[in-house]
Image 1 (cartoon, rainbow, N blue to C red):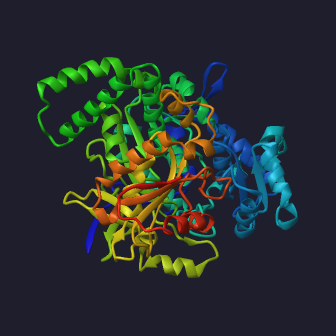
Image 2 (cartoon, rainbow, N blue to C red):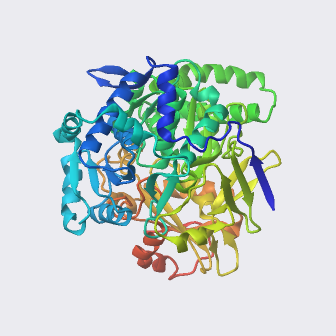
Length: 608
């Protein structure tokens, strides 16, 4: 059994809770800007001391409203400064937040609030409140709904004026490391969401050790980041807490359509993103170049960037002609993309799905080192991550300090250490099934190289076994195909079937530009595009390329382009944009049956 375990580099403090991280930050640098909020066309800084004062004032409001230590409070909001303000105010009040994705349906909200036993809810907007009210009759425990848009946080602050500082300090110190800090529900990609009990020690110890491991990223002078992925997800939530501990200035932009202008004005030094964001940046740049008649130059620049980075990673000498080409493309292409990202981004932390070596090498040549990592809600986000001084593109990095990973005989990744959650809320059966002793069974399949860098090769439950007995990991095919500009999502199918095939959706954002660049009507509907020969040829090209990386038995032989989208609203994607494979296979069983109705002997046949 392969196993890598790294001792913690910061001594554990069993008595510490998350609020201590803010207290320590204020003691060290009270006047350092911890946050920046939009102000006109620019940004207004909020210092560590100011943030703490606002946190205490709101915590008093929660206390005055009857929130007691240990009470569960639901929270539905986009990624803004107020998210972390509410988060820490609840910590200071001794309460336990139950974050809910702001895109959740009324039924999903009802499940999280009912299962958790929440007694109150904070919402951001009237729309969020309406969804809560829709199921309010099924939520007898909910005593209050506070809506930020109507000024309820200010009202709470006013009502809490009579609560003493001493009372909040008492509440702040009640929790120790073993106590529950938050209850985060899984995305539900494999069934009904389960509540993960994450403790204060999970966050405190992981934060303190990660800050040391990633000190080049978070402890450099002037370090800053612009958060745009949802803080309801453990990935951004952990980074928010890490930033407070490390003194990183954090801005927020919940509207990804405004991301580029926000990056330009905020100018972060590092980013936090999922692979789909990097794909969008690359594809948008490529299609923009194509529209301007410079597509050939962009593709040549991209090829050179990937080749240049790969040689550097392998420690090989860069040929003179490549150095000249690289310098030219840096002026024509790379520098413009750096400027578009704000001009100061040096690192980007990527998680939640595989990035792929091509994009990793491309951004590396732009001067942006993507530190891909691996983790789950159950591991408080990262278990492994590439480091500034120890990085390999195409892997998810080495094990973090305080964490151990072993590979079971079937390749399943199992984790133990400071980041592993306590249990599933009110679900002892699921908890028992998820552990082998103190090792959490992730359900993911991976492999280590000789230096301890982990590569994710698939998900145990998603392995396809063809009728011929061939084991196929869908991600190996899906990830490169999804990187194509017009591909929205893809699900590879073929379990107990004679060959591998795929269901594909188109990307409605990128499709119009691609159509225009190919002398087709940019107003073409998804239904029309799904049947168009040029679109089929482009998807075919992406599939042909992906098939070169696998054996013939694993290659995609047929595919169908659907005329609909898979979205969170349609029930086919999780809030972090992961596919709900079982739901898709159920809902599109007819399309799958049609693929296999006629056997094929040739490779890559598309169905009209």
